Length: 242
Ligand SMILES: [Zn+2]
Figure (cartoon, rainbow, N blue to C red):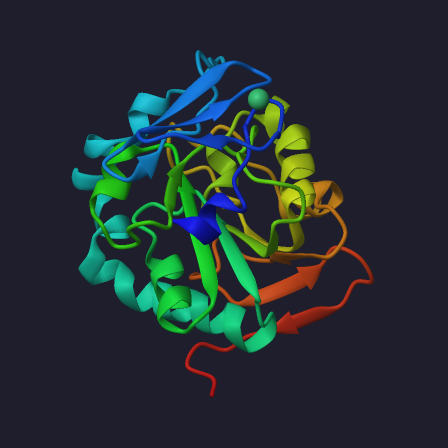
């Protein structure tokens, strides 16, 4: 976990954490972040956001229909292959942080390909699936537990629409802080009760930091057309393209 530890920080003050046997400790905030089953819990303590329920995104979300097919290893695998191919062929990441990674299928593909990658999600259960052991941390998008510019690419697919609208400015500023470039693919259509922030493409583009790719269709697995937040550069990726 050494390379991971060189990137993580206190989610509150962004200071360096002291490594203890079963935890990571912030001297400044006097907060002890537990490591449970090799998974650092870097959620800000007592964090409560109106309208957002961490508990929603645990065992039931990932195992009960209609959402289970999206996250089950079998049916999700070809989608993750496609997502990683898009990133690899067009963005060439030196390192990658997947915010809202679920089981970490994209991170798994990065690691197999020799690209250092870390997956972050709120759920302990997703990390326990063991697909990216030692590369999974619990954390939240509005208080990222990582050091400034610690990743080349921040990847966030099918996640932003789950967050309350009033936190999006903070989330984008956190994304910009920890990464050099970003690859974002929110969902644009209201199709679930827990989708708290459904906006159109232009709304998101206005809020993207510079040097960010934004998917023009809902989630990158639905379509593969992207716009760049600075300079207007665009590219279209065809599935199965060599
Ligand atoms: Zn701190």
